[in-house]
Image (cartoon, rainbow, N blue to C red; front, top):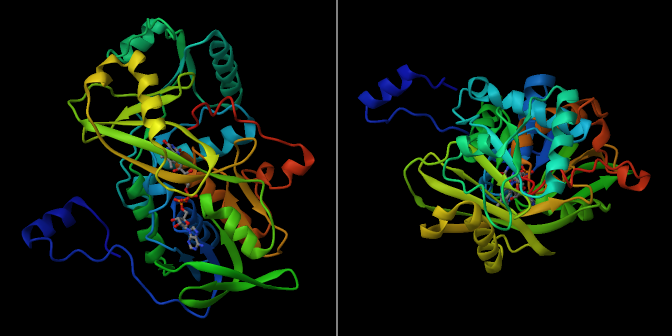
Length: 415
Ligand SMILES: Cc1cc2nc3c(=O)[nH]c(=O)nc-3n(C[C@H](O)[C@H](O)[C@H](O)COP(=O)(O)OP(=O)(O)OC[C@H]3O[C@@H](n4cnc5c(N)ncnc54)[C@H](O)[C@@H]3O)c2cc1C
């Protein structure tokens, strides 16, 4: 595959962009692969990429029922941060952040990583205590975060009303290295690199069944026929429960719709990401100028992939007190995705009851930021059959053993 460069852009400009290659191939499935990954979202594609790059396993197929990046990866609000509370979480999210910092160069694809800084507002005394605790935990973990005062918040975000009557801003947990990236580009960049390594990305191909013999997976039944494999990785986010059922085991996971919306584009007015967890809303400004806004999940399990109307109203009502300018903005579009939630709000990167079958899910409302670290850890698990240090704590049996990695506080609105 030809490298993208300034010279390539100049060359193509001269010949009316007729010479660009397809970014990834569209092959027909082979009878068998060394590894099959179900789900061409960010986590599935990153798993395949690091299987090839770190472990030399390239006879790999990534099977996707729709189009690559069309699940939560293409629907999220792209917040990237690593200011989690528990050590295993800080380790994997910060590994992901470190990989994001050089991902564009690594993939030769501009993922538009923008470390513009991220604020988590404290708007109750309880939150002040919680975030100070997180700052201390982060210091011990080597993750740079700091506590900042209301005046410092106002300096960073002049459009914010810090003296609201119900929920004044009492300070914030600030991670200067946090920010945003371009979700589609992350999926496309990994897909292009996987295809370049000879891997097969098979779109519009739904897995309908998982075949196994004597506790070992032999392959998957798909809408394009049976595809055999020596190892199977399930990386399907909100559909993990269904895939696990096909393979004959149950997961400690539930599927819920989460939605987001964007405003009409306006002039640049906010160059950090702001999360307001007490009132349950968060906002950043996209490169196009739209205010990107999100809130909480639906209060009931569903697979609707659109979200409910009352959430839009509740999220905006929550944010308007802190950002009065929002009351004069028109909202442009709204969408939803199906997120996979565990009880302790931490993911599963785990072996399963089937010997050669592995699962990566449970990233819930906050897995975009984790894509590179998660792919790195899942690839190691699939290649070696045992988890490395990044994934060791995230096995699915922790719920039986009571070894929760409780991120329900540090996760906040959890994006
Ligand atoms: C509205 C919203 C806002 C969010 N905001 C943020 C944020 O700001 N920051 C953050 O870090 N995270 C955020 N998230 C969470 C983040 O998007 C997800 O955690 C992450 O994208 C999960 O990636 P994935 O690759 O695991 O799943 P997905 O991208 O959903 O990929 C899974 C793929 O599996 C495919 N699949 C499912 N079943 C089958 C089958 N049977 N056969 C074949 N293929 C199948 C699906 O079609 C899908 O493409 C948000 C999510 C939503 C919905």
